[in-house]
Length: 356
Image 1 (cartoon, rainbow, N blue to C red):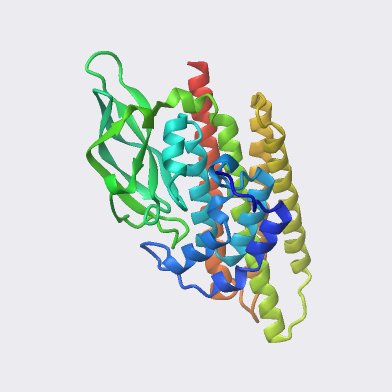
Image 2: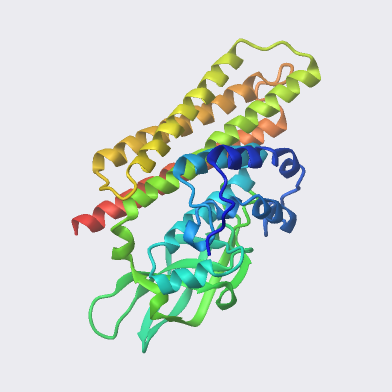
């Protein structure tokens, strides 16, 4: 049954903004699960309910709201924001399954969904379903997730193999620490594996079903991801201002350049999200994808450049800035690359399958 307490965009963004000081005080590990206290704060604020449909008790937020929330979470830390956005993206994918599967997943109290687009398994057709065997790496949020959206290659006894997406409960998965990877540390990434797991047919869909909605979906996920990048730039600005106050320093002229870059990045992020929201239920075109890609690239580039400027001007005589902003600049480089690559790979796959 839907909740009655669905906040407005401003209410939810303000609620999350109020948590920034609290979340900044949490120590996130370089590897392993995000601390339970961090997940509890995010859950209590309704962050994970943001993309869940209202008929299933969520907020059913639009892309502009996700950008605003992700930007505030980015101010609290790249890993916190990235974890939320990863769960949002996987939660959206649940919507391509049938009503029975959706009811199962969204019927899980406080449900968290993880996933990865990598096809790391095989799915052998059996009576009433498939048997899945395989493994997936770098699954952000897997430690706390109740369900995972997996991609596998179905191998029938006759006929050509075909890719499928399947929903597996955490109880059917083995979750272990992932090998080190370049990127944002502390996102709770893990390696997951399924060994001879039976998945009923209603929790499996052919990827062609997903690809029918994939391009607009990738754009929608880009909207939340660009919010993460924007928030990381805002985090850099917060760090910089705090350092100025502590040092009683004057503001270097280049600082205004960084602020202008962040403001422009925010404009691109808002335009991207508005385009996605304006196409709800409508056809998505290649021109739309191109506009989203342009805004995404511009926002990522501006946010990244702004933090590098702040790092360069921070600290007396420090060419690279203090350690905190240097680390943030490295994380932002990795996050921007990942966001852009994810959009290009997803849109490219959609175009390939649509043309096939």
